[in-house]
Image 1 (spheres, rainbow, N blue to C red):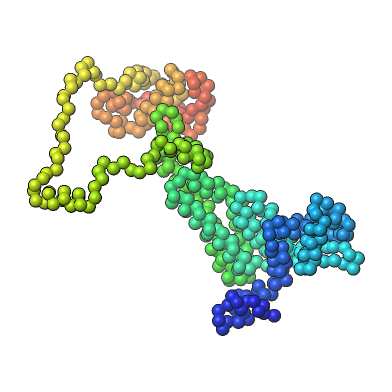
Image 2: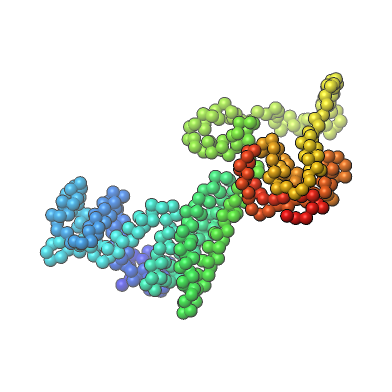
Length: 423
């Protein structure tokens, strides 16, 4: 039977029976009426109906309640208000009452309670919608009831997440990118379960064409989300390269921005009270007539602009006795003399040790330079002399323990004269 009130929403000359999209909703009117009953009225009335209905459905071993048991269970509610709520639920088919006067949930009431319980369960987690949709699809797949419409809801959510992440990257805001990255991490397990669900779905050779088409599009959307973490890292690397440190304090511009984001509007207004002017400071304030007179004088050649003072300041005596700082290559020269006198192959860690971690790191970098060959070095100077040493340097792929000279472990290797054969 068509609802006469629907004609108020339809265009002139259109009947509700002529709109196929309304057929499924009309067929589910009893279930929709149950939800309408639950959520019509003030917020307090809605909360009380949900409270009573959930508590009645929570008892699984004894699902039938006597009126006295209900009054005992809800002693914290006003007795008259409780009777009003029970009557509203009973009259609208959410509660059923037997011949013995005991209350129990109707079929529509139990379905409504189960749906609300699932929504509340996922409401405790971040991005509850994706988890709810994935769990819903898993349940539908278990009973063989997956439809193209149910898959379309998941595809829409994945595309919405992709759009949100792309907007965060395009904004260039470090905080939006970090929030988006945390959101992606929170959705990781749901994306994995969605992938497992799609693999099982597409493995069925008899799956419907529309379902398979949407499932493939979901797979592409999940692949884009899987690559989003790398995009976040690239964007954060660019921001890191542009980060500004305030002097030698160690405080960066990101730290200042994070601190400002933690303040309320009143605190920020207090900070900016003496830092910002209410109006800009204008060096010249002139109207149209003044500007026109000035322009006429310049066009007639009767006036010239005041020449700017370009006089240079008086010359100062250059400081005497200043010598440019020369690079200290004594460690390089000493290391070169040591290697010239190398009689036999030596382990790498013995060659570079001595003087602590910093000199050892310097010697190791020199040996890595020596391994590149003499042709890559300059022709003259200490560096060129070092590069022409008749030595061979071999670096291994494993670590060897050192335990001395501030070195715990380093790459296994060997330095040997070029005439000597490998050990």
